[in-house]
Image (cartoon, rainbow, N blue to C red):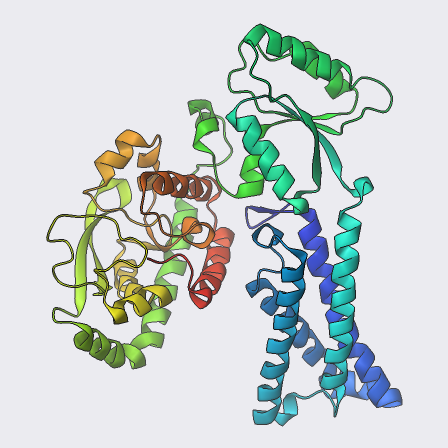
Length: 458
């Protein structure tokens, strides 16, 4: 896997994106050659044709990204890939038509865009078919043996079998419920069968619940010296899922980890970016402010803004500001999490939650320093003691400023149950471990996608 902005991406997804960049640019370049002939050099160099093709390539890749064409774990059926691909090409056609209508100078040359889109449609459908066939071949898949038989091993097997983009094929694992001594002998026998000049596996993933008395150290060493990669399940799951699984975390995971370092220089840079982004966001929203105020006022009686106490940096409480989206008596019976299709939410409030308009006043919290633009979402003090008691390491969320958006928001969504709060924490811990300015910028970029897709809100 390839690491970019402290996030791991499957090598296949990166190759897919680069190949499609070449296909897009090549389709429009071929169309320019066929239409312009000898004048192609002039069009590309003196009429900014090369720059326009580059812009078309970036625009097409962005559209594909927003339609999840580079996240195969979210698309299960091949027909859906082709359907989304045609949606991207259709959307691109309408978008280019509108751009050329209002800005004719953006056209490369007469009929070039039309011909290029035809070439692009044929090439992309053919390429996706070829790509699906290529990654399905065993020669391009790494053979994996999962050492373990508990819940952690089962999780590894299920994820690898559902993630074709990981490029790994589980050839075997022991799912029998035998005694500890018998399990160790079974593991040792399995590992011993991998010896030889051409071992039947390329990688062994150690996913034992309890290593004491079960880990076949001698056999693992022989496999390691025979060229087989030995890897723990925790780092693999972290790379594939983008979260730290609480079941596999121990104090040593934090003590000896390369991450979880809150550097002063890094915090100053993040604070500067958060302040500038929040100020720009408030200025951008200013013309729409009267309309939102009017909508909130007409939706139901009550104040425009909603104030609520949240837990911030170092466990200190602060007041968060939002546009009111619920009835004024929403918590007459006490504090509780919002749920899907919550009856307490007004009709206008539901729209504002889906589009995140209700969160805009929190930009003021960012300017004040209560929050950062990116970080774990601040929790209510009514829930924190319960969450700290029932979820291990929950208090680690308070070692940095909470955020307007975060890794858990773009990768998971809203949590309204204890199990969902636990999974959200796993994403938050990943962010805290790998926190960097590059990761913050990536989260901001993905937040736009989340808002446009209207995902993750209750």
